Amino acid sequence: MSNRIPMTPEGYARLQEELKRLKTVERPAIIRAIAEARAHGDLSENAEYHAARERQSFIEGRVMELEDKLARAEVIDVAKLAGEKRIMFGATVRLVDEETDEEVTYRIVGPEEADVAKGLLSIHAPLARALIGKEAGDRVEVETPRGTRYFEILEVRYV
Image 1 (spheres, rainbow, N blue to C red):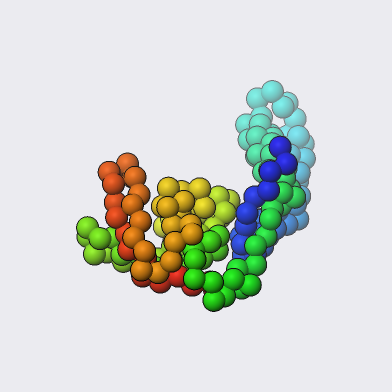
Image 2: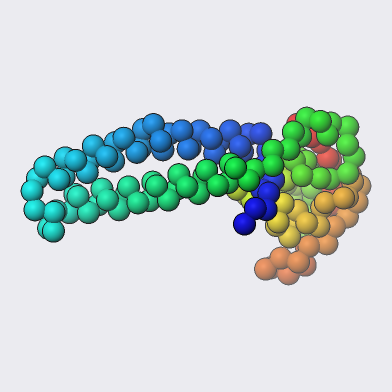
């Protein structure tokens, strides 16, 4: 599977940092923990050993996953889009829910970076898909689990 993963420079840096921490801190620590548990003798009933091996398996799996994602990352420099009026990947969009008058602000990011609670909306989310290509002043209709919602785009910026 060689499909590219769109990512902001910040998202790429976060994944790199996690990979570095796993390789330089977590991996050596778990190797020490396994060695200590082995020193306690009989491994068949050694809970510390089995827990450490399970943690090691998780760490190695996450390292492989991060290396794959970083290798397939397509880092998009949002700063180059300054002045763009249409909504594209990386845009920060301020919206108002036409039913509740609630204002929300989202940045459209790659799926690996998405965290709605932090205002980071995956490019694959229904709302993001509805916003792509639109401009400030446009209205969008989005199907959500709670029914159809209507938003007006108040502002589009690239930071």
